[in-house]
Image (cartoon, rainbow, N blue to C red; front, side, top):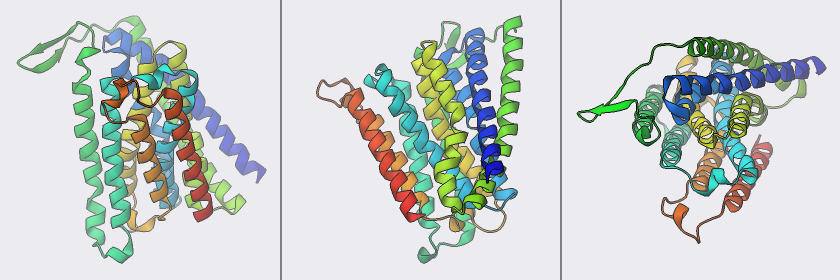
Amino acid sequence: MLEAWGQYFGASLLVFLGGWFLVRFGDAIGEETGLGRVWAGVILLATATSLPELVTGITAVRGIDSPDLAAGGAFGANSLNLLVIAILGLKWRGMLHDPSTETKQMGIAAILVTLIAASMLVLGREALGVPPVAIRILPGLLILTYVVTALWTIGQLGSVLPSRSSFSGGAPSLSIPRPSERLVKSTGGYLAAVGIVTGSGIWLALAADDVTVAMGWSSSFVGAQFLPLSTTLPELSVAIASLRIGAPEMALSNLLGSNMFNIGIVLAADSFAYTKGAFFTKISAVHEVAAIAGLAMTLIFIPALVFASRPWGPTARTKSIAMIAVYATMSTLIFILS
């Protein structure tokens, strides 16, 4: 038992360190290329910090035949990322006071892909009689939705891109600067950090499975509660590091972008990697709780767009407390149902 937990915490530490370096190098790349911090948060950081979920999920379905561990890792990471926003919002209230247009767009995109994934969880129930072939094909819709919404979000970032962006005929055209020495070094450091996160992510999935066996817990519970605590460490370290350098827009774009990636790409990849049937017919209904919690927390964070500017709208503190309450309720229900 001690060995299993030791490996779990060792892998978690490496994941955290990899995420810390990702934000440093990602921010430098954003500055050197002139694309800005929001772009870096959506593309460079959100994708890279979601690698642990992607690697652990595929390892779970291919290496240890545990679709519940993979599904729990994706849905649980979504909710945990939102919990990070809520907790950090208590200290840095400006994060939640008046979300930018880009942040709202990412929140809406995260809601859309999560709704689609939740629908697939329901369609996967045997009682509905949906053909397994259809369930195996449907995850492609998650990828399509992610690509479309990501392009939509990035396409709206003109207000935060520097002046070296130009527009011709309605289509953006970016002049790519010559690689500076700092850009080359930052890119090399970024790729090295990605390698650390990827390797430790594989180790983490195997360690989580050992903990499941050692403690006698269900893979649904470990996947939804314990695995996300480690796989979201890069997002946590990125968020804290971003706030420390005065870049709340990078923190939020990374966390919400990661949620989009976790469901749109990671969950779909897990589904296609699983070869012993239709993925969504093999996972526990308990994950519906995590999916609903993720939707509820996002709707609290991104209320109706007009509310953010109204004096009687919810305060940052109120939003944070409500999101924390939803997460606590979800955790309790998952523990009981698992």
